[in-house]
Length: 168
Image 1 (cartoon, helix red, strand yellow):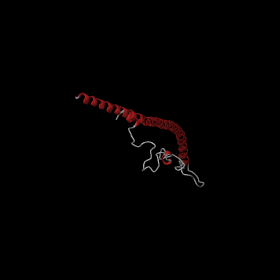
Image 2: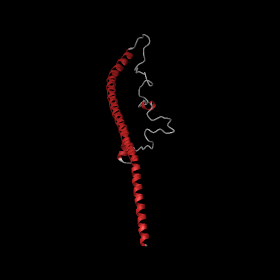
Image 3: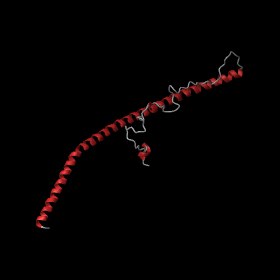
Image 4: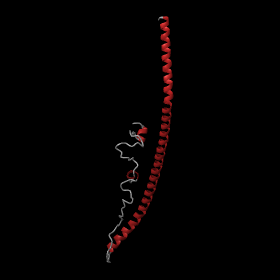
């Protein structure tokens, strides 16, 4: 497999773009089920919302006393959670940046695909115009062919007449 095939794939479709087949039921590959399909099964959208949260310690549902050991353990945990929260903020900032970059690449690729599709239509329109023009020339070619055939028959007949006159 060549480098270009590795980069861009080698999928070749036998289907003619824009053509409806008996089995297609009038549907093309651009329905909402495909165009609006989530880019990832875990991507958040109105049909895939997750309201889970984070809770490092259980809630205290009623007033209570805490022992010295409990308060010291909670103070230590609180300090750890402050550091971890700062790191989580940095990580989420990085994740947002990565996702924004992914979105830029995705959007650029879709613009590229859109341009390819539009250019393909222009190319096929040019092919269709050429085919139309070529079909329009067929009667002229047929007429020229017939004239050449008639000239050939006339020449052969004239040669045969000369041969019969001179007895060859």
